[in-house]
Length: 423
Image (cartoon, rainbow, N blue to C red; front, side):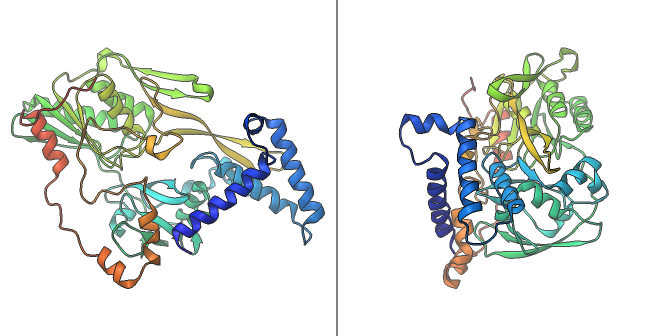
């Protein structure tokens, strides 16, 4: 079945489901009942009665309940998940702490497992997995049939074990990539000087301890005579909120740098700059792309909101959430998103629609090979096309030897490219 056919099937199913869930009513009354828990419970009870009384076979109500709970989580966001009782026990006991993954950050797009970024030198990177890849199958398990949590669990395993992935990539035929699980070390930040007294800091992660390393790199550049800084946040999807705030604070002396937003847009936590931790006040440019997510988006948004400098590249992915496990009487549970990370002005990075998620650069520079997480139809339909169409799609694109995003950043700081100052 092609992706378009799948979409049509899902759409028709959704229409039928919507009819059942709102009782077939139209107009204001139906809209009011959508968010009425009592009305929804009565509908669920009615459907359950039909299953018990009218279904052709004797139903396994435990499976029916598990399926319903999975469906409830699926209708929320990629990071909320239903956990079986066994998964709850494993989660609470940290049973998987001894297992290793493949070194990539994931989300879900259109129901499929999506690679936000890979960590340099990790098993995923060495195997050839790239940002923007869609993982259709993990071994023989379709990722569209499982939650993001379940997919991530399937990727974990003993060091040295292998996992087979069916990967869909823009402009390429579907391919099988085998990744050997293993430990890896996240590279430390790197720095170098460019002409015009410009210092470049390449960041690979914002995990705990990285902010201190970035601070040291910045101070070393200043000792070498750097008067302008490029902060490269491309491909940075891993990290903590506190590390992100520490990095933003290096360049922004005061003000609110990030927030954590809860239900009804209530501000749960606020992170403000500490003037004593501020280091650099000179011209600044940050680089972002589709692989920039979560903690790195905190830094980029702070630079924009305080007109601290330009942000060059492509719109970031849009991530940053916090989950809480709620256990049920049956022993299973819900891993529910209870908060979102947001910019200092309160804009969450993860929106209801993918097109509204992420941070928009003040200067857009798109690479020719950049993936687009908002349009997966062409990628998902590639394996349904004729060999001739596939051959046309897989013609290699010319290698973009020049880093056009970095070039633009250098031009801005060298005064060769005029840009509007962000408000």
